[in-house]
Amino acid sequence: MFAARSAFRAAAPVRQQFRRYAADAKPSESKGGNAVLYAAAAGALGLAGYYFISSGAPAAKKAEAVVKDAASAAAAAVPGLEAKKAFTGGEQGFLSLKLEEVETVNHNTKRFRFKLPEEDQVSGLSVASALLTKFKPADAEKPVLRPYTPISDEDATGYLDLIVKKYENGPMSTHMHDMVPGQRLDFKGPLPKYAWSTNKHEHIGLVAGGTGITPMFQLLRAIFNNPNDKTKVTLVFGNVTEEDILLRNELAELENTYPQRFRAFYVLDKPPKDWPGTGGFITKELLKTVLPEPKTDNIKVFICGPPGLMNAVSGNKKSPRDQGELTGILKELGYTPEQVYKF
Image (tube, rainbow, N blue to C red; front, side, top):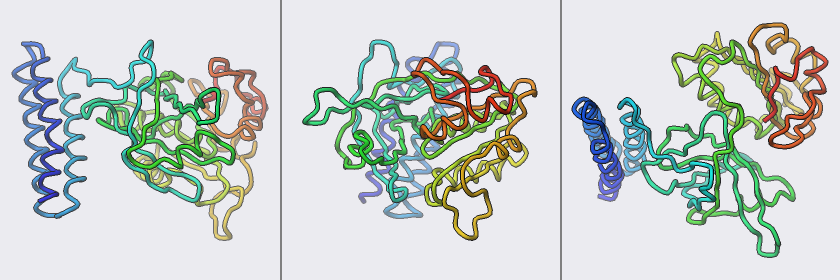
């Protein structure tokens, strides 16, 4: 009975959402648009019932996911209709979000799911952009502020997901790793980064280290979730150990699905004996071999990672608004500042 109640409870916000969409639709869109919405609603509820009958107790979460996905699809199906955005920027200020789930990813990294204020809201983030987090330690004069790039889809309704690595003496990452479901954290955004558009570049290179993969994954989702985007992508991803490779399954799925357009090269500082990839650090020779050549038209190289990686490959940013001087390996290989973007 609990699974059944949960399944139909999950559908309730979507019914409300469909009613609002129907009320907001223009007269010329109302008939056809509502038909799409009602069909999506019926399909979602039907699938919820199917999961309950066939799967038993786990049905609630499956049904909730199906219903939320159907809501997003229904919103996209009506021309000119935008989903409600949780984060609108400007003078909005910080929003307090409740932590819903925590998943341990590896020895020092966790995945956090935060609920948006309303079930039918999307985050409001564009690609590429991030969110600013804030909390004030009890003995501190000023709050701690840290930016993070969500790994959940921009059109996901009702929640956003973060992957956070715990750093020694890192106040925000330590605080978040100590959080339990039900507690709250303040967010503000979006913080605009590099504005992506369909086929903006023919070939892009992504050089990432550790949790620097998160803005790269945001770009990857935007490109490969869009059937009209034909951009080629090469990823070079450095980590300490094999266990530290974040989003590895998601990256492998993209590589298997788009073998002609996406290649990933992994570099480990401490590789296991049977490691098939590259050991040590990201080198000039590797980047020269796999990245799009600087003389090629319409290419871009993005980089994000710890200060050591940034210094060696491109030089660090001066500030969030100042990319700083291009130095390091990329400059030695002949890339221009216009061809490189530092997250």
